[in-house]
Length: 503
Ligand code: GLU
Image 1: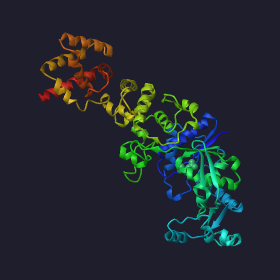
Image 2: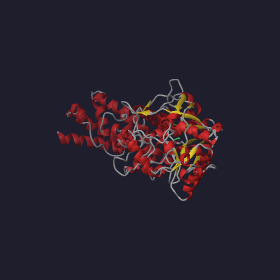
Image 3: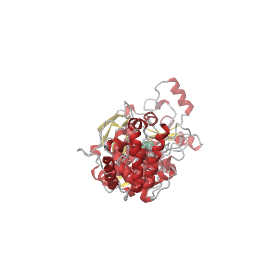
Image 4: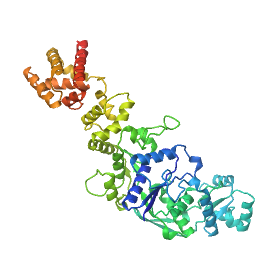
């Protein structure tokens, strides 16, 4: 039975790479009929940021990567927040000392700091520990007495030198670390809280995790983790590891960082985050106007592809096709243009009513009041032209309020006295056409233009500018139909007024 977990630390907004990690875990769980767990790793109180946990949960809900168990989702293996499990880790840390794979250390932070000052590359390890104050040097009895008097201590992992530690990573194959190069990591801190390493391993064991899928940055820690599994005698149930490739900047070299969002003007977080300063606050994919399905599709392909040419996949298809073996080792470039083109395709493919429920809040936020029927017509008119949901009310504002600016360059080239006269007559016509449907309008207007001895190209661009201000707008007769007779006539008159003021 597959059991996987997403284990973020609530240290701020969840980076989009974290959402990819969650997604891959989720896909594997759904495909294998397994369980996907959300565990909050908040043992580093110094880095805890209020609101981050809610942000993580809301982000997962938004993309539809819903945990089966975890903080905010219930389950039988909880609590799922590490700060609620403090006693569990203490018990296991002491047990590891009993088993001879860890030891108590009493060196004060000041003493260690002095050592670091004196020795540039000082680390607490198999070479230095014999000259430091710990239960290996002062003995177990003395150590216990010192602890009983309330002296502060930490518990460290006792790494034995001279071993090659092999990790069978499902993406990277056999990865080897030399134990002689590893430090004796702190497992339990002086405040009684575990470090990431201890809490992570104890929880993965107790929560019966079968596969650990996480970012590449955790690969070096895995050597220590293997030693912990061995120390506890849990090798037989050690999870299988998969370390995901880095997500690289859209341009240039290096991994995508928080700062790249502002630098490239792109979202790098799923949702908006309100930080303490303006620089620490930003919009996410949601606020920019992405559909969650497009974001999921885009993220799934950051480092994974099932093969073949197809690249549009629904969540259901991803669940069927996903396989760890097809995840690449090399960094995956964050191609924002691709994300945009996915979003465009997803919007295009979505039905008008579903889009309307997403667009309505945007429309209302702008203070526009429209009926459901109108909104649905406006959406169907615009949806082939938008990249973001927000485009419906940004670029497409002219469907909800009068044109703000006219394409003056085109007007200057095409507007003249003859045209003005024809235009005035056409405006009259619009007021009297029997039917106000696009095909009828088109037929009638084209006939009228011909009757006047003109070409469609003389009049239609101007008609379009009168209705939407720009040559880039949607199909002209459809737009007139959506706006309706009254508004169409008003817009034609308004442009004529605008032109006559200039002459
Ligand atoms: N708490 C770690 C993080 O913030 C989890 C790493 C892991 O999945 O083991 O990413």
